[in-house]
Length: 143
Image (cartoon, rainbow, N blue to C red):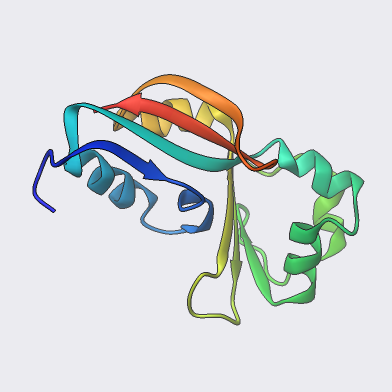
């Protein structure tokens, strides 16, 4: 698409599955958004970590424990249940399934990460909680 083509850009459950090149995807969404356009981009908030700690059968926890998965930070593989005994290891946590070539990541972001890093690309005017299902929040901003 040409530059500044869209009035609205919506990326629902996209950045929750991109463990690499996040900034490139954000830059591309910004490129195609008109200067007065609105971007709504959902993300899995790192607050979900609390649920992973409390619930051993949580679907994300179960997925990363039953497959060969790497967690960044700190770059460990395979992941064991010991990982879920403490606080999240960072403001952005990526689980990458090492057995699957595509659609293989689950990425969590803190609101602080989104405001800081995504705020370098978009002018953020809101982070809406539970904007996409029960788990994902959304950054709403403009170019």
